[in-house]
Amino acid sequence: MYNQKMKIIRLEQVNSTHTYLKEYILKNGFEESLCIFTDYQTNGLGSRGNSWSGKKGNLFFSFVIKKEFLPSDLPLQSVSIYVSFILKKILKDLGSKIWLKWPNDFYIDNKKIGGTITTVSKDLIYCGIGLNLLAVDEAFGKLDIKIDVNNVLESYFKLLGEKILWKQIFSDFRIEFQHSKKFQTTIDDQKVSLENAILNEDGSIQVNNKKVFSLR
Image 1 (cartoon, helix red, strand yellow):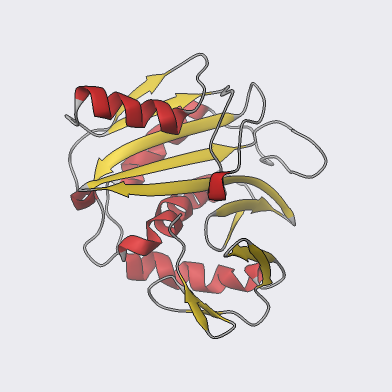
Image 2 (tube, rainbow, N blue to C red):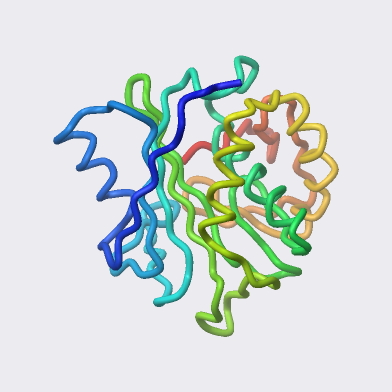
């Protein structure tokens, strides 16, 4: 078990928890695992440079950890799947029907309710997660249960700290991957169907004779 505690800082409002966290570490250096969270960000980052700002009352958090925080068998390219699936597990245990669409999007039924971005800088891993607790618009869904954000974050980082092996997470994700086959994903800025995609043990997929990893 990784015994270093996660320091959690709540901000009333921020442009982006991910941007704020990176700038904080750049200025102050890394001294301990750190999480920044808010219920309102004005210029949030989504995958492929898209924005994920949502509205006040939703959950946005970013955290930074050292690579050694993660299990030794986890392929670095699949950190997004790993950290997302841990959160999905916490929420599912609370009664949600949330599922994880490859590689890092949270869904309820057929609507996206959130997602994860992950970046690597030397020996540090930065993860940013956005989750709709409230309705944003008709194109997106929202979490189907009420949660206490502080309790969820505490449970999340506690479970993350247990360093569950990738092979264990992957065995569960492989089953859930069948849901992803009804959808598309974006590869090289093009929408690609996942219907015939093959999930590899390192978390990548084989689609149209191309191997694609989740890290973004």
